[in-house]
View 1 (cartoon, helix red, strand yellow):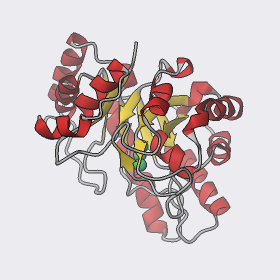
View 2 (view 1 turned 30 degrees about the horizontal axis):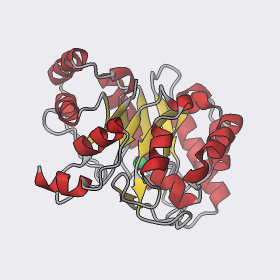
View 3 (view 1 turned 90 degrees about the vertical axis):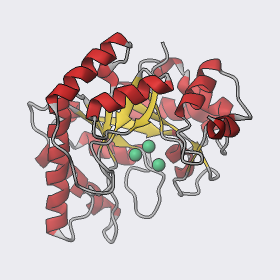
Length: 292
Ligand code: FE
Ligand code: FE
Ligand code: ZN
């Protein structure tokens, strides 16, 4: 069974709102931020809304086990030049983990961080140190380090960096990986040869660590280090290459999450999910989204 959904918003109805939005799009899984990704304002988790959400998921075959939370971008575990910012990032990650645990969400995607003015090796050690301080043995969660495009001084732009981080985490069972097709493309992985990448992943890190795939087309050519998502089939990766990732036999139990851009302020996900399920490119996709 295809496990697919999109980024949805955790608004005033919290998890219940996420589920309702997912049903509208025809997904069976979803990803959410517990608040705006750029700021630290977070509303208190409402247990009644969560209970309603669990019921609705049950009745609509939504796979709560595979639901993903995404940590905000303001967390940067890579740079400790300002110790108070570094501490803030650790504290905020800790509170995001606690929110996930209270909701019962098992996976939290995290951008590894940006080195800014530090050497990459030092920045990577900062990430390892921070994760080792934050993670606790009893946490029922897996932090998924996202593969990054290589914009600016981002860390996590190839398998060796991710492997090095994972190998140095004390509670290694609590660390996994989320691959992002746009980021892979922009970091220099040609998705025409996705099998080669996946084989490397398997031998270096192990496919048991791969717990989420972000599905995005890209506005840029391979290796441009930009990170600009495009709608499915409307970028440089192309519909066929994206389908190969989505329907890859080795990834069949891994949730696929769309993070493609809105078109004229309208979410594209219902139309993209339909097109993906049909396995046929819809050249009128953008018009269909706008028309709705
Ligand atoms: Fe991300
Ligand atoms: Fe992503
Ligand atoms: Zn991105």
